[in-house]
Image (cartoon, rainbow, N blue to C red):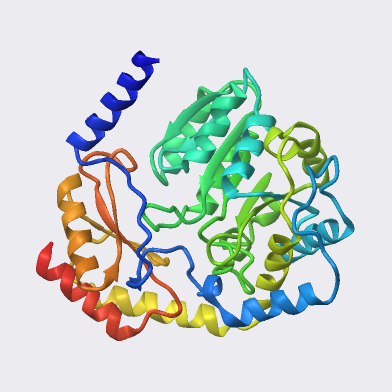
Length: 372
């Protein structure tokens, strides 16, 4: 065991040396410019009331009692999945316990050895891990570059899949969806799109960016997560009825995990109901526009029209120091450092919300400009 302990100590020391050691922080007293709670649902008293009112209507177990295939399934869950599918204009939806679980289950099961998944170079780690478990070949194409995607597809073998995000979590930019679909369809490649940072925000009623673009019927699968704009927890894979049946039979992260408790499910249901009030998205849009206007001239800002705004600060130490300064001034904006992002692409990641005030946004930008 000494060799293992030495390895762990050495690995941690290396992270410490290059200022990339991750640590947990529990400081929630600062102004929130870091969470994915874009619409403020996670702390919404209105959502909480809807949830508890629904719980009070009947007797429900604290836990689900087992996996969906054993004891954790019920009529409420199935009806909720049907509602989700209809909401997003699809045949079916299947719930997973998290976005990570959903991507792991989906990619590890639909792709097989001999197949090829061509993924955007900035795709989420959960997609990469799912592809690894599938034993399929993985190619990366240049970020948001349809020509690069085509070059990779020319050399791909087996069943072909294209993996993208609609809004990218570390840059905040949007995928060129029409271009991606045109290229993918020329090679009969199935497009899988992660809508984690678009669900609840884009589309007429928060259906997602792909729905807003009119391309949702052409996607093989979509992923919606509920821990961001929806303010609760879990995820759904949306697609054809046969895809749902397939995942029930072959997605290990669905088959071999305890199903979510009723509280999670009713939270998702009520979060969809909250989206009927368009004021949350309108306030968020106003704040995004205001931030972009106030940040003009800040050359280090990555172009983005989403809730995610990133300011490049080269070097782990510099990024951490700026984040620490902002926190001392009462603003919680996180440093994203290597290896999470490429070397020399370190940044301060600012997440905007419906509840941020224009005064706070302006003060935050002033602090950044004075210290970058």
